[in-house]
Length: 430
Ligand code: B12
Image 1 (cartoon, protein in one colour):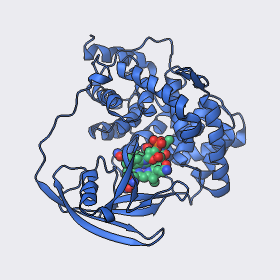
Image 2 (image 1 turned 135 degrees about the vertical axis):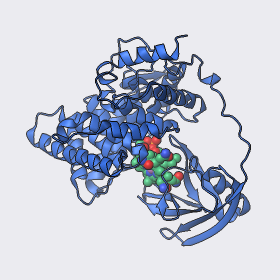
Image 3 (image 1 turned 90 degrees about the vertical axis):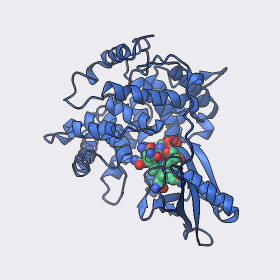
Image 4 (image 1 turned 45 degrees about the vertical axis):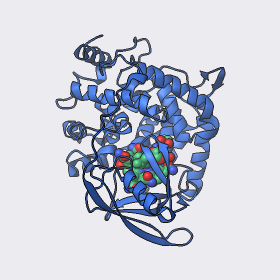
């Protein structure tokens, strides 16, 4: 087996122009941090309930194409695409599967598994058409603007459908002073616009896209300065960095202090596989825009994670003894739908427990009041219903979590409340 150091050398050489060597000082990921992040992705393949296309995309963009985990994931992604893309996937999911397969040098127009096949581009075109029609008519898409950003990016990279028209709709959303769009979503929308900008000759379209890109890129630079390297929050920073890495002509003559943003992200030591998968492309200077232009003739690179074992051999996390008990106040309220309610309780859980354990303890003590349901997602368990009241895509409602007055920046599977903390779940709209 190649040593980790040697394989990192191979990897960085393959990354070529975008990676180490050409980036300004402080704007490269330290090799040991790259190894740590790739190990998290490898482990996630074995542990995850659902195949994650963002992880496959990250492996490919980072040039780590040789691990068994990545091969296994590619197979799972193809199987899942054939089974679910047409009927059970949102447009954004089809877009992510398309980007993952493109970056794996597989044709998304003909995905085959177990004797069946699917044309992902056709499915994506149809789903995007519905999203954009809804967006134009009601000012909101069927799912999320983030998803429509991914849709237009994937359509543009494959020159499919009405992506130029769709980009105009997205640019107008970005320029609308009334639309409050989060950094993650602005970043993905901007990447789509960058792709279209390079593929259109129409001056009016170019001017509009340029105006939107200028506005987004400059607002990211302002946010980074205010946030000491963080743009939005730590999870959105690396998506914004993909834009700043590729859109310098839209913010010139201003300059980007990339070292400040890089250091903010890797000093945070991201742990969640999805957070790592979204961060890695910017850290290796391979943005989502490169998903369709990776060199498919390059042989698979051994993973610098330095492991040669498949997903089945992933180590299980060490068992920690439970901490001393802490007390957490938990309340649940709704005044949006049906009969209003506002109920509270206090539960005791071992220190270091996640918020999910708090919800479980509350449910166990008072099942009639605090019953809840979750669904597995790429970010872990998402709470979809509490006290019999479910969030809905059609009404654009969801259960939002707060600590006191502050909205949580992590989900229930990750966030760990402190002793005496007051967690609130509030039925909200988005
Ligand atoms: C749109 C969005 C939402 C929408 C999703 C609506 C919908 N029907 O699609 C709503 C408003 C419901 C939402 C809620 C929350 N979100 Co949100 N969301 C996003 C955003 C901007 C885009 C997601 C998306 O469309 N992906 C594209 C589709 C194709 O992929 P997907 O896998 O199918 O997407 C699903 C999941 O992303 C899931 N989801 C969305 N947010 C979250 C958050 C958590 C913790 C989980 C488990 C799942 C989840 O909903 C999507 C649709 O089913 C991401 C940004 C990002 N960087 O990923 C943040 C993001 C994922 N959300 C985040 C957070 C913190 C939350 C909340 C916990 C906020 C809160 N204080 O309550 C809640 C979840 C609470 C709960 N009930 O469990 C963080 C997660 C960070 C982390 N480390 O865990 C992100 C990264 C934003 C950020 N930069 O902080 N979110």
